[in-house]
Length: 352
Image (cartoon, rainbow, N blue to C red; front, side):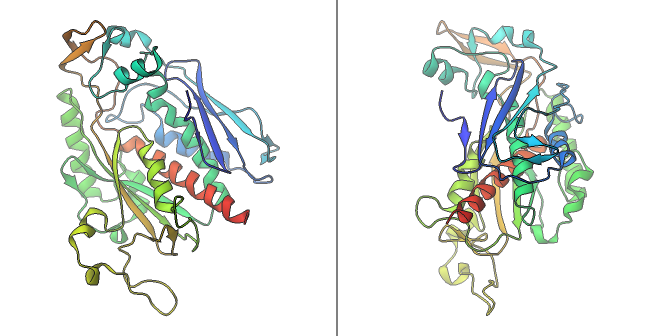
């Protein structure tokens, strides 16, 4: 299987399955001499871990990271950083019923057809459990580019949206509620809706907004390695992501050029930022902001018609511990993937 490595110079390779002994990763290309803040790494892992509130999966994993190499006396040595995250709360029997069936909208069917074998326990390699390793890599990437601030938050759940621009939001309130929405009134509506959906044995999707501030001018390349193209690839590699828009996004398609152009000030900044901080594939120094769409979680705790490996349609009800809405736990994953992209571009710029 290919496609387990992300990045060109600052690279993260992940390994492991949802119900194996552990998941983990190898970070290559990390500069030497960086004094790591292990509490910051732990904090991001706590934000992603299961079982943290009543509106997420109740699988209990502490997600403690064990570093195996590349760090000496708290500082990076410049050699590959190896780490593992033990899986301690697997309940593989919860998946015995799907051993011979394919869950709708999961990777089950295509995975087995492609590789001829499938770890049905929680989805194996295609499980969102893999993203814990990305959060470790992203937490270290953030410490390579400390001047850049990366903030993600839940901007909608179902048809409940924040109705304010991000500039009017207080980001310090993101962690004050289990939904990770900085608008308190909207967050309460979202939380109640997710609880209602959970009672129905159903799931719901939504959007996450990411805002990246203090980005220097010049990250990105003008042809195939455009900054927004790499950020798009990073976000679309996250489980359940179905779309991404930068700046004005699809709304910009309705506008005239005279309305959409970001006119410049004498200092090079722009009066508006409908470009979303990226022009010609290169950062322009303004805030980079984008919105990511997440589909509803595919596993439902209600009966559905499913295909069996004998090509029969049978009725099956999902079991196990699943998120009714993936968004709250996906916030640190979005930040991590953004950090990996920016740390890699920072390394590329330093090599020129």
